[in-house]
Length: 255
Length: 255
DNA sequence: AACGTCAGTGACGATTCGTCACAACTGTAT
DNA sequence: ATACAGTTGTGACGAATCGTCACTGACGTT
Image (tube, rainbow over all chains, first blue to last red; front, top):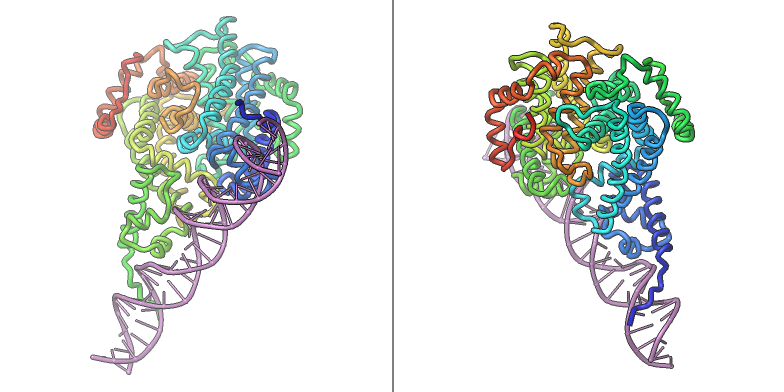
C-alpha cells in the first residue's frame, strides 16, 4: 500500500539548490526587490507549478536563500573560530570575516536580513523555518566558543553580572550595526562621509573589547598588525575575490 | 503671463501629511509589505491620480514616511541632548530615546530602515531625497553635540586617532544593531532567548563608553539609577504610552 | 490493456502598479 | 453672462505579477 517513491531525494535537493542559485543570480543582477517568480521560472528548466512544489511562495524561496546565506557565513565564522591566536584576536577576526562576507556576497547579506522580517517568515513553510533555526544555532556556536575560550584562559571575565550569551550578543549586534550601516547597501547615511567600514569596525570592536576588559587591552597590543596577518593567512581566496570586485580591505589609513 | 496658482501651498502640505498618516495607519494594521497604493487611495478623499501628483510612486511615498519618522526621532534626540546631566549620561539617555522610539513607533522605525534601501531611494523624487538628507543632518546634530560636550568638559578624549564623527558613528551603529536585533521586528534571532533589549542596550552602551574612556566609568558611577530618573523626567508621556501598549521598560532585572 | 498514482505544465483569475485621456473647476477677459 | 485658458481631479485601462488548478503524460501494478 505504500505509494511508490518515483523521485530521488537527492535529485530534489539538487533541484532546490538550482532554483536558489538562479534566484541569487537574479537578485545580484536586478536587486532583491525585482525578484519575481516568473523570472525565476524562466531561468530554470522547470515550470511554475514545479517551482511552487518546492517553495510555497516567494517568501518561502527568500527564506531558503537566507538559510543558504547563513550556511555560507557559518563556514567563515567557523574558520575564524578555529584559527590560532588568542581569543580576543580571533573574535576580531570573526568580526572581519563578517565584513568580508558582507562585501563579497552583498546579495546574500541582504537576503539574511530580509528573511528575518516577520512577513517573510510568516508566509514560509515550517520545513524551511526549522532548517533556518538549526543553521543559526550552528552560526552562534563559533561566537560562543571564542567567548568561552576567553573565559577559560582568564583573558576575559564576565563584566557587570552579564552572562556568556549577553557578551556574544553584544559583539554580534555591534558588528551587525557597523557593517549594515557602512557596507554599501545603505547608501544614504548622512554620517557616512569619511567613514571607512574596516577602520570603524576595527575601532569599534577594540573599544567594546576594552570596555569588556578583554585582555590584551588595546594599549598593550598591536591588534592591527596581527589582524592583517591573520586575515591574509585565513582568507587568502576571499581577499583575492574582493580585489576582483575592485574593492580592497584597506588598513593603510589607520595603524 | 504667469499662470495663476490656484492651489494653496499649505493646503498641499496638509494633504501630503494626510496621505502619509493614512499610509502609516495602514502599515500599522497590515504590515509594510501589504501596503498598496490602492488601499492608500481608498483611505483618502482623493483619487489615484491626485495621490500620484504628490508621490511619484510607492517608493517615494515610503521615503516620505521615512522622512516623517526621522523627524519624530529627531525631536526625541534633541530632548535628550538638551537634558541636564553629564555628557555620558545624556548619550546613554539618547540611546534609550532611540529604544523608546522603536518600541512606540515600530512601523515608523521600520519605514526608516526601509527608506534607506537603495531600491526605494532610487525610485524616489529628488525633492523627498533632499528633504531626507536635511532631516538626517538635524538628527546627527544632537549626537554630535553630546560628544562635543564630553570633549569640552574633558570627561572624554578622542581615542586611537579617532575623530568626532567616528565616535558618533560608533555609538549610533552600536545602538542601531542592538535595537534592530532585539526590538521585536526581528523575531527569529536565535541568540534572542533570555535577552532583554533594555538591559543589553544599557550594558552595551556602558561597555562602549568605558572602552572609549568616557568618564565617569561604570565602576565609578551608578548610571542605571541616574538613567531611570532621567527617563521618568524627560519622557513621562512616552513611557506612559508604552505602558498602554502592554509593554514596560524593565530595569528590575539588572541594577 | 486497464487502471491508479504522482510529477509536471501553463493558462487563468485576482491584485497591484502607474498612466493618460478626459472631466471639472477656477479665474479672467469680453 | 459667456467664452476661454490654464489648472486640478478622476478612474478606467494596460502591463506585470502572484499563486492555483484542471489537465497531460509517465510509470508501475493488476
